[in-house]
Image (cartoon, each protein chain N blue to C red):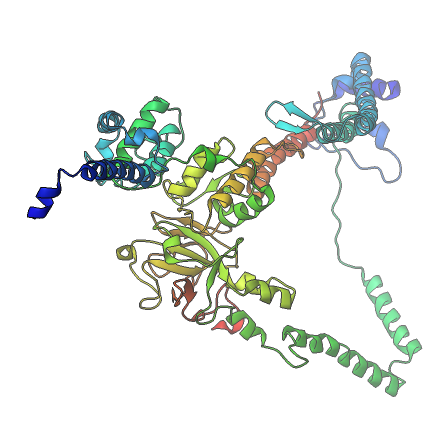
Amino acid sequence: MSDLTTRGGASAPDHGHGHGDVPADDLARPLYEGPGALPAADIPHRPRRSDFDPKAARRAERQVSALFLLSMLMVVLFVVAYVAIDPYADVYIPMFGVVGFQTFALGLTFGLGVFCIGAGAIQWAKKLMPDVEVVQERHSLASTSHEDVEAAEQYERGKEESGFAQYKIIRRTLIAALALFPIPLVVMLRDLWSPKNGSFGPSPVELLSTTAWVEDMPIVTDGTYVKIRPEDVPVGGLVSALPENIMEIQEAEHNLNARGKAAIILVRMEPDEIRAQQGDGWDYQGILAYSKICTHVGCPIALYEHRTHHLLCPCHQSTFDLADAGNVIFGPAARRMPQLRIGVNAEGYLVAKAPFAEPIGPSFWERG
Amino acid sequence: MKGLVARRRNPIVASMLLLAALLGVGGVYAVATTAAPAEAVATSDQTAIDEGKRLYLEGCSSCHGLNAQGTSNGPTLIGVGAAAVHFQVSTGRMPMAAPAAQAPEKPTDYTEEEVSQMAAYIASLGPGPAIPTAEQLDYSDADIAEGGVLFRINCAQCHQAAGGGGALTNGKYAPSLMEATPQEIYEAMLTGPQNMPVFGDGTLTVEDKQAIIAYVMDLQEAPSPGGLALGRLGPVSEGLFLWAGVMAAFVGIAVWIGIKAR
C-alpha cells in the first residue's frame, strides 16, 4: 500500500504532458512494464489524493474495510431477523405504510449486505488500485490464412477417416433418417383437434369460431349463476353473465375454455341512446349483450362507462362504443366487439336468441 | 233510501260507524307506513324537504336546473334517489369545484343533517334508491370469500383486484376503495355514480353487496406483507417504479463508478 503511494507521489510533479509526449519516467511505467503490459495513454494524468497523501490512503483503506465490515454485520443481522422476528408481525415504515416486519428486515439486511461488498470493492478500485489511463488496441477478427488452410485440412481428413464418401449405404440411410425424424412433430399437430368419442372432434377453427351460446339458452349471472329477468338490469346497469349450462360443460371438459369463450356482459341503456346494433332488434328493451373478450388479444373486459357507453380494455386501452354496434373507437383492436342477440323466454328470463354471428375474441389465421 | 234514513238511529249503526272509522284510520296508517319502508324518516318530513330545496337551489341548481330537471351542465336528478345524493354530497364529489372529466372526492362543508335534507328533497321529486338501512349495511355475517369472487367478477375490472382503483377513458378514473365506507360502497353499487354502472339488487342481491363490502373492508385492514404496495395498482406501478426509481439509482451508481477519484 505504501509502496504504491510512494511511487504515485514521486512522479506526481511530472503530470500534465501534452499529446504524443509520454516521458519514460511516467508514473504508469513502473507498474505496467513487463510482458502483456499496456502502454499508457498519452493524455494528462492527474494523481489522486491517496496517491501522494499517506493519510488519505489510510482513510480510503479504512473506508473500504468499514464497508466490508458493515456487510458482515448485515449478514449477522439477517440471521437474527430470520430467527427472532415474528413472521406475522407488522411494522409501520414511513412512505411504505404498514408492512411485514420480517420481510422488510430481511430485504434491508440482505440488500445492504450485498451492496456493501460491491461498494467496498468499487471504493477500493477507485481510491487505491492504479488508475492510470491505458490504451488497449483493437485487433482484426478475421482468421489468418494459416488457420484457414488448417481448417480445410481438418475437414478433408474427417471426410476421409469417417468414410462418409466411401460408404454409400450409410450415407443414404443417414440422410433418410434425418429427413424422417421431424414427422412425429407434425403428426402431433393432430392434437389440435380435441378428440370426441375416439374420433376427430371439431377442428381448431371450429373451436375458435363457436361458443356455448345457442338459441334459447338462458343467461345467468357470473359468480352466483342465477337467471336474469329484464327488470333486474336497470338502465346504466352492468351484469357479467354466462350461459346457464356453463358449469356442466366445464365439468365435462375439465377446463375453462368454454367459460373463456362464452363470457358476456349485459348493459342497459335508454332505447333511444342506442345508435346502431349489429342486427335489427338484437337488444331487449335497451338491454344489450356483448362478448366480454377483447378482440385484440383476448383480455376479459368489463370497464364500462355507463354515461359514455364506452367499454375500455385495461390491457392495451382498446375502446369500444356499445351504443354504436360495439365499434372500435380507440386502441389496437381491429374488430368490433361481437354482439349476442337476446330476448326473453316464456318464463320471462333473458335468453340468447341465436349463437354469436361472428367468432369472438382475437383474430386468428383462418378467420378471414 | 227511505228505509236507510229511518234506520240510522238504530243503536247498532253507531258501533258499525265506529268500527269502520277505526278500520279506515288503521288501514290508511298501515298503507302509509309500509308504502315506503326504506325511506329515511327525514324524507317524509316536509320541513326537511323545504330546507333541502333551499340548499339545493343554493348549491346545485346552477348545473342541475331549478327543478332538478337537468341542464347542459348536469344531468337530471329526478329519480336518482336519496342514496345518490348522500353518496355524492357527503363525499364532497358534489357540488363540483370546477367542470372536469370527473368529480373527485374532497372535504365537504355540508353537515350530515343538510345532506339528509337535500336527499329528502331529491327523493320527493321521484322514486329512487333510498339511503341503505343499518340492517342492509350490516356485513358482520357476510362471506368474505364469496365477496372476493363477486368483487373480482364485478368490480375488479375498474377498481383493481385489491381495490386500488384505476384509469378509465379521457381523464376519468375508478377511485381507490381504501378509504370508502360500507355506506359509500353500498350507495355506489346501488346508484352508479358518474360513469360507474348500476349493480341492481336483481343481479347483485343485498347479501351479495354485503359480501363485497366485507371483502373491501378486509382489504382496507390488510397490511402489505411484501413491502411497498405502490398503490396496489399491480404491474404498471411496479414497472414504473423499477424503471423510474430503481433505474435512476442504478444510473447514479454507474456514474459514481465512472467518476475519477480525486
